[in-house]
Length: 163
Picture 1 (cartoon, rainbow, N blue to C red):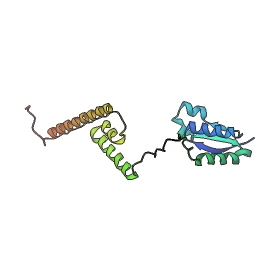
Picture 2: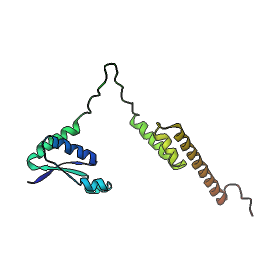
Picture 3: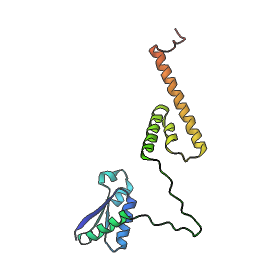
């Protein structure tokens, strides 16, 4: 019995779900690199992800089932009779997301890592935001102190008090 590769997955859980679905339909399937990839997730890229193999006689059916799985829409929500459907949260436009990411990178470069996180995610407790603001201010003050020291050393700023 020869095997044929039917699909590749970057995620172990996704590969196992697909294999379970195929097994439920009666298709024999093998998940390659399942144990090695589960132990060392960094190696999954080098291994080419997780591969699903099936007998050649069942490969066409297995590929069709994988295609159905990948194209499937999420199941509808079961709502009670008196509940109204909640619309999905609105996502910012791609350009707005790009601008926020650029601003986060700029703030990270200037004020440190804490300032970049202030722009990216808005759902956090006020205490965490306060700590991040304090860390960003400390990073900014240390940056100003370094610039002032450099300017003084270069002779551009105020002359030092020592001889």
